[in-house]
Image 1: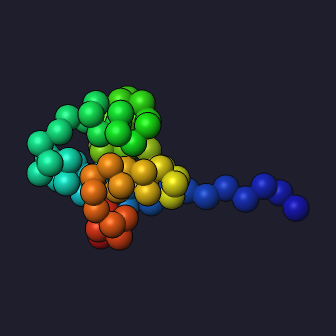
Image 2: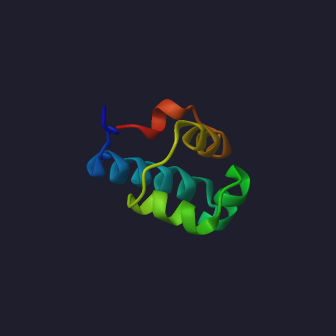
Length: 76
């Protein structure tokens, strides 16, 4: 059997990133600060916020924890 590939949902990624950006700005912190708190690179944090990359559940959980919110609030 061949390897199954999955396309990520671009709309979901974009909305996910917008939610992160919204909560981050409400906290008054930079992308760099959020990336540091979530233990990810600033460039990856930028890509997530712009919705151009998909992320793992564990990374999403770290981002939510860094934003001091429940992960469910990051999904539309």
